[in-house]
Image 1 (cartoon, rainbow, N blue to C red):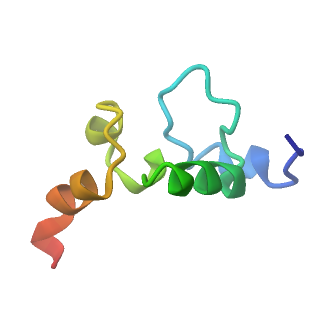
Image 2 (image 1 turned 60 degrees about the vertical axis):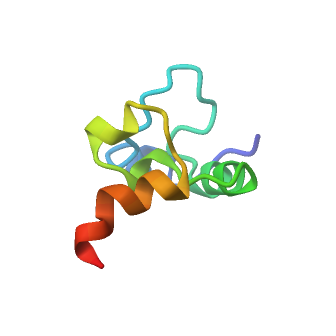
Length: 68
């Protein structure tokens, strides 16, 4: 995986709780991976929801439906 010039800056927003993730704070790689799995990355979810590891679009809508 390529290095990211913004990785250290992105660390303050990366809330991924998966310890084995090799994409921490490499947003373009993370987004590409999760979209290919029909998911959203952890940064789209509040911390309690992110920890469930349910990154589905359905889960995202359930959490944010009050904003629609």
